[in-house]
Each structure stands twice: as structure tokens, then as C-alpha cells.
Length: 96
Image (cartoon, rainbow, N blue to C red):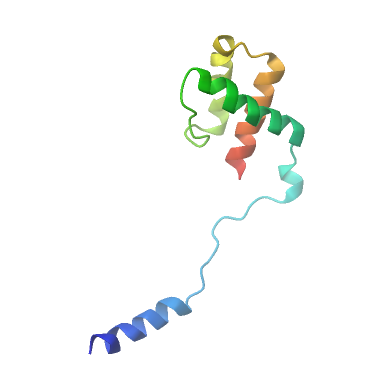
């Protein structure tokens, strides 16, 4: 008896199509310097973890990351190019 009640409900749910609510921006708007992003990923993993665990890149707003990285650059002995690479990686990772 229970199956006769559940079967129509299951059929109704499985017949619905899932809608994709997020549409990524066109490729032209997502162009990044792959070498810079790869360097930033490596630096993020190697240098940032020397002092603390790696935070999820979505933990902070995109506009907050440059200031966060810059505030820690002295302690991590980051050059301006390394800071730029880390920020580029974080922003690219957030965009995915």
C-alpha cells in the first residue's frame, strides 16, 4: 500500500529537470595568466602554511584578499611579484 503512494511522488520528482542556476562568465572574461596563477598556487601552499593553516579562498570577499595578502607579506618575506601571484591564484580559484 505504501509503494502505491510513494511511486507517483518518486516519478514526479525524477521527471523534473534540474536547473543550473550558476552560469560562468564567457571565456573571454575569465582570461588569466596561467603561469602566474600556477606560481601563486605554489606560493600559497608553500609559504602561507609556514605560519597557519590555509584558509579556504571563499572565506573572504574577493576585494579583501589583496589587503590580507599584503598585510602578511612582510612575515612571509614575499616580493611584490609573489604577492601578485598569490592574489591572482586566489581570485582565479574563487572564480571557479
